[in-house]
Length: 323
Image 1 (tube, helix red, strand yellow):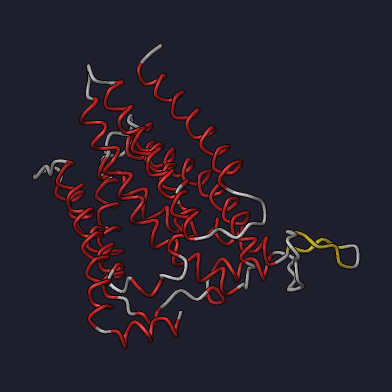
Image 2: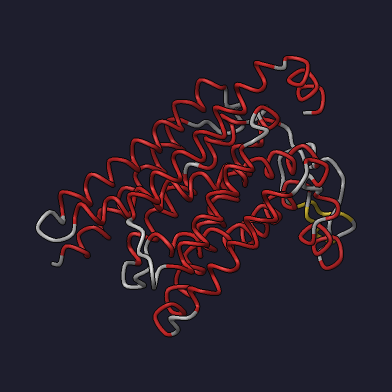
């Protein structure tokens, strides 16, 4: 059995066992997740992800174990930081549909599982495109530069509005939906017809919205792991980041307006990644530099946001009133 096959088996086993442990022991059906529990769950997924990184390093020690581990952790941190932007959109969606807190965990779980399926599809298609067409990396680079510029220049007033979003309009136009109180159900029978409840609409919307985020994140991860044969590193870094979304949601819930400059930090990362992909042929940037840029930009934007809120309490109070 090859090293790659062993890592695939371990990865699959870790994901399944971790999901069972998270859902069976750390989460209870219809329970409201407290901040303490969210912190425990977030640390749980981070530790699992870091442990898998160590496994990659030592299992492939005779080959490129160290290099693979650095690429994995870089891609994981990149996806994890981009996921924070997803979470703030998820928070707005939950608020818009007035989802009861005791249904958050179940709805998020289904949304996360849908996201995993979509990520696998996008990675498979992306790997095939990169393997067949080298020039596709330049398209990815230009796309990330455009996305980064738009994100950096966008104003708070252009905040995500679920009612104006294409996914919401799609469901309203093509699916049979109802605004009746779901009472924890995803479907309701009305006059012998089956209708999607608000909870089902949230699940579908989370899945559809993640497609948009995947269009950003999948090209970005190829800048860290450009070899399409390294699907394992791409799959594992993406899926571990997505699996931590649910606990991270509860940890960041209510903190949306505390990180005013996080968007700019993410934008700078995307601009750097896009430029790196365009210049790779003439100027190779080591993966560890990408790792440092991600950590400095995201960490710096979070710390600067906290500093500005402490420096201007009036602004922080305004943020609380708007949240």
